[in-house]
Amino acid sequence: MNFTQFAGLSALLGLLCLAAPGMAATKTVTKPATKPVTTPAATPVAKQVVQMVYFTQEQAPPVALSNLDAFIADLGVAGAELAISDNNTTGQFTGQQYELKKVVVPLNSDVLQVFNQQVGAEPGLILVNLPAEQLLKLADAPASAQKLLFDTATSDDALRNEQCRHQVLHLLPSRAMRADALAQYMLKKRWQKWFLVIGQTPADQLYAQAVKRAAKRFGMKLVAEKTWTNDFGSHRSDQADVPEFTQGVDYDVLVVADEQGQFGEYLDYRTWIPRPVIGTQGLIATAWHPTHEQWGAVQLQNRFKALTGRWMSEVEYGSYLAVRAIGEASVRTKSNQVDVLKNYLFSPAFALQGYKGVPMSFRSWDGQLRQPVLLAAAREMVAIAPLDGFLHPKTELDTLGYDQGESGCR
Image (tube, rainbow, N blue to C red):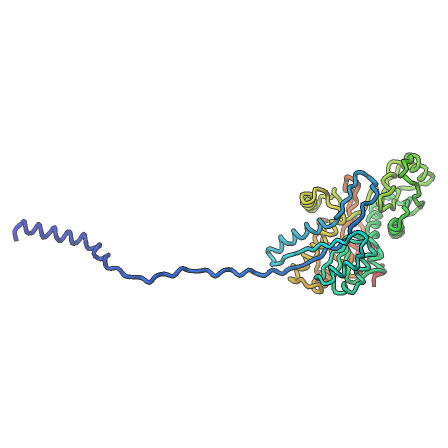
């Protein structure tokens, strides 16, 4: 083999070596077609629905007593709506959904008839914003036998005593609780001589009874008691009426029983001797107040104001607590059944946070929500009862109102 032939052979072998990888690649293996992976559609998880009814009646606008007090036709329902929103926020994690149906009885219509027609077949969690006598009619109706009624508006002591009903829970403080809260503060200040001024309405008489009970309970002395009969509607000179009315009595505080606000606001700064005013005007005892800002209350105040454009009222706070109590019970029991929720609400395990610094619960003997009571002036939070030093073997909250041994509820 000459040099020329050897060179050609070497070149050919080099080409074959370079082409070998490509030649090997021409031998392909056919793979079976890969089927696309399909994820089965997620099945929606059915939520447990907790249904409630808000039941009230239209109210005629009262005679305007002050240009500062605007009439709110649907007072109360906004608190329930805010609480429904709060409950549903929790319900996203607990698999529960809360719904609220509103039933408003037309003015001058029969409340019981509308209740039987529109609520009788509804689930049994009913928020009631009605006066005491109408609440009792609903509680005694056969349609309410298996329901749970949440009284969001009354303070009547009779409903917590001789007129109590086993399926009614009361969210606002009773008159006795309010009077006891004021008496605790008066005792702490040693303002123990009381001059009681009573209005002419039945509600004023009931408030006066609570004041007298508190005075006896905490060792106060009623040095005078008068009924207010003067009329400010005809532009009479209140500068002369009030000093004359309060003259001749030595007292520490003027206690006012005027739930409609017909005269109580005129008494402050006009009495014969300089004395503070307490009761339904002046320093008041209330479940809720715009000046309350502790324990997260300012956040609730702001959220309510963003929703409605105004401050939360006491009745709206009662509605808020009712819905939140239902939410708490349903989350803990994982149930929407009335009997299960009722048993839990009355049990020692139930605890409701109401922006007052301590857990609140229902008294097993009368259905009253035990809670702190705010003592407030127009633009100032003065104190919160029960005050330090008032002790109780179970809970200091039971120093306010009728304790179990005092209760007339059977």
